[in-house]
Length: 173
Image 1 (cartoon, helix red, strand yellow):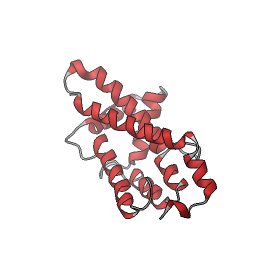
Image 2 (tube, one colour):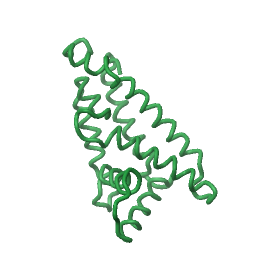
Image 3 (tube, one colour):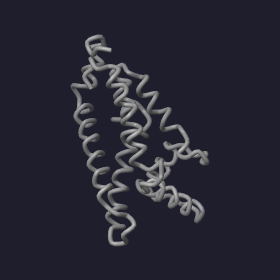
C-alpha cells in the first residue's frame, strides 16, 4: 500500500494533528520504560519500589497504546486503521485476545487491563483471592523465565508490526 492512495482528508487527520507526534513519543517512552525495567532486579528487596513504579508506568502506557477502545485514542490499532492497514490492527487485537497462558482462560488484554484498572489507574475493591491471583500474574509478567512476561508480549507485538513493515516497505511508517 502506498500512502498516496489514501484519502487526503484521512492523511490530514492523522499526520496534521498531534496524533502522529504523540504516537511516536509514546513508542519512545514505552521502549525507555521497558529498557529501564530490564535494568532493575525485582528480586532484590531494595529495588522493589523502583521496579513497581516503573512497572506501573509501563502498564499505564501499554494500556493507553494498545488497550483503549474508541477511535479518539492514540492506539496502535487506530493508527493502522487510520492509515488504511486494518489487517495490522486486527492482528494486534487477535494477539491481545489470545490466552495469557495455555492453562489460563484470561486473555492478555483482559489481564493487563485488569491490572491497570484495579491496581494502578483506579484502586478498585478487590477480594483477597483477586489480590493473590493478580500478584501471581504480575510475578509472571515480571519474570524473565516466563514465556508470557511483559517483555515477550511487547516483543510479539513488535514482530506483528515488523512483519507488516516488511510487507509494505513502500509505506511510510
